[in-house]
Length: 120
Image (cartoon, rainbow, N blue to C red; front, side, top):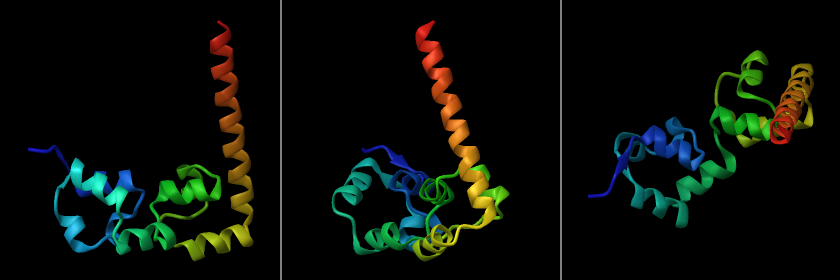
């Protein structure tokens, strides 16, 4: 018997927004073998979700170069599509500039701490 996971876990591993997945995927436990099969030979619905979204917040944050908290501070609380993300990138609002700067500073500080810890 293969180990199973909840649909929300499988969706996270696939980088998709669970409510946008087919009902069958949302309502059934997924085995590791099934997850591997979805990764190796994705069905059209998965290809489409990965291409156009809607995307979960962690994916949206990564595409915009901000943290998930930065999305919330910017008023983004829902999943976004590729077109919506593209619009934000093409015409970035002030909050996006601010949050990108904040995110880059946090990353730089983490790297500085990591490097300092290696020296010790």
